[in-house]
Length: 51
Image (cartoon, rainbow, N blue to C red; front, side):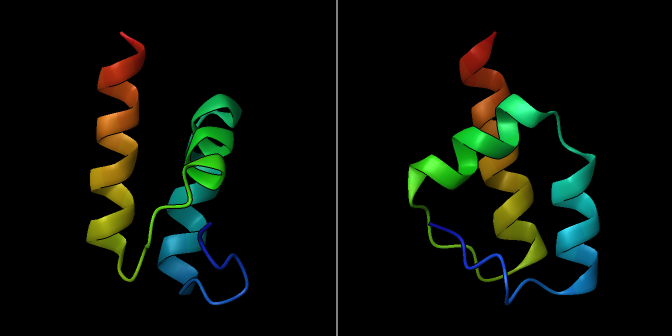
């Protein structure tokens, strides 16, 4: 699970901009997110998987 308390402000802003379903999928994935690039890659992969 992403550590939602250790996200940078930019990461938090991006996460908050995502649809709720994508946010929940990311949280449930247990993926390690260490940077904004990681978060974007996971969100992109999640979005592509939902199509």
